[in-house]
Image (cartoon, rainbow, N blue to C red):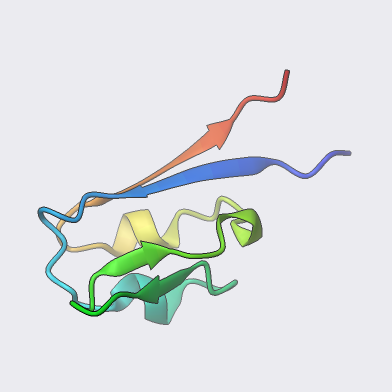
Amino acid sequence: MAKKNFGITVDRKICKSCGICVAFCPVSVFTTDHDDKAVVTYPEKCTGCRQCELLCPDYCIDVEEIAHG
């Protein structure tokens, strides 16, 4: 079975730099920039668990499966 790929977007306009996504991502997809806002640094690691999306208090993270084809 092929590995699924996911696209992760962070709306930087509403991200308040809480760090929850960085702390709770089980595969360390996120890092932070000089403003401590979330950056999707390793999207290839994403397993699609959506913990970042579910735990983000500002709803600024979106995770979508990327269709192969």
